[in-house]
Length: 174
Image 1: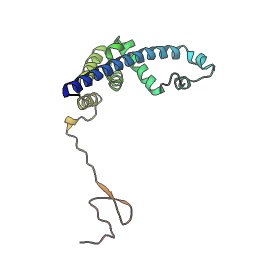
Image 2: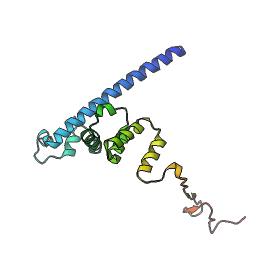
Image 3: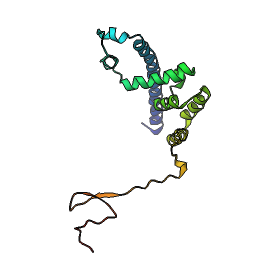
Image 4: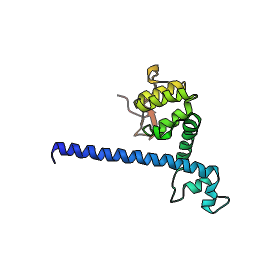
């Protein structure tokens, strides 16, 4: 294969991968809607065949197999961004779930959510972290906050941890 063929193959595979991922995320959104209905109506107990069945038991069944934390995270995102503010989750598929969850936890108004979603879509990781930290009143990289780390080593004589500036009491002095 020449360089052009390799480039074309790489691009073709990448395009297929991104299309598949978009489809997977779309199916996930629909699954969250279905799971929400199953949970709200208590249908998971019927599906488990146990009137005392637990939600986590249903989610962990082999044919469902979602973690409770993943489903809870998506349900929170749906409740805030879709139900409260009216966004279509299908339009937000290009934003990582971690950023969607952050927007859902921070946004107080639809306008603020719109602005944050725009940043979530375009910001680099460091810029996103700084924005979120500033909104939460935490330190950002622009604050000039410096960590005061101490370095330690494990002593070969006694096996204990000592700050590097300290000398072991039994070490020979030079």
